[in-house]
Length: 359
Image 1 (cartoon, rainbow, N blue to C red):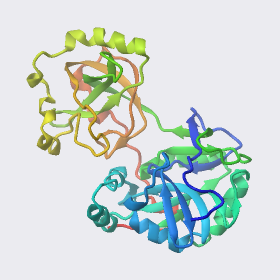
Image 2 (image 1 turned 90 degrees about the vertical axis):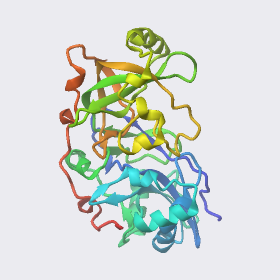
Image 3 (image 1 turned 180 degrees about the vertical axis):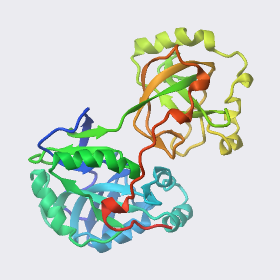
Image 4 (image 1 turned 60 degrees about the vertical axis):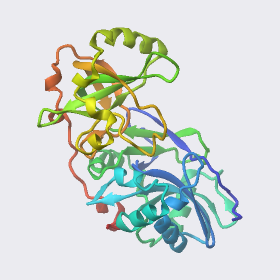
């Protein structure tokens, strides 16, 4: 492979802001795996956000990209999987599997798509110093008439359209809106763009905590919600605390510590088979590897208000929730899934224009 921009490339990033800024170029924020595609003739490589290759996990995309991208190019975009007109991040994570046979089975069962939104190189020219609007125009020409599973991300300069996308597209599983300065070059690994994500709040039960890697202070709070059967389900964690606050939380939560973990609603967490019928902390995962997933059980009496962006499959917080405050006025039993907002569904094909591949 011999391109004017060679791997590894660390993608340009975005910083969070509260509102959609004016005077930008706007795109939807895709909830998938960020990937930079390098194509030099028959050679195709998929680079991840960390620079490590994703190529072996998406063999069907390698074939599709070799057929649909320009002969020599470097394209920034997102790998996604769609089911029933909605992005499915769980199906995407299943593709990161050590067994090649499993990867190829899933490639047939849940094929991925690639959504292109930036062009870093074309033929023998590097475009890293070219303004974004010009890179985007070149990308649109290069992908004119492209067919699924490769898509050109919709983009607009209209602030009102961006605001409508922000409200509507969440129903298709998208994550918000990205705002890009029109004259910006491609700045690797810099937070030079802006992301506006959905944020809601929920009252949750704090049912345990994990210790911080640095010592005997709180690393993350384990959060739960009651389902319609009255079972406390693990829905995620809250972890962004100062070291001073982490130490304070150990003392603050000490009266709730359970000497006998067998009395806890999540007492079965250490048995792998228990995770098949309930959502418990410490579920086996290829992402966690040998990471210590043990935790300190608490009597599930304390309620906290947390902020979250959206739910994954209606079951758990997609990202780490942000602690807002304690809620002594709320009872744990009142912390149910019923309080969560559900976005109006929106068909992904209305965004991409052509149906994504389905199993």
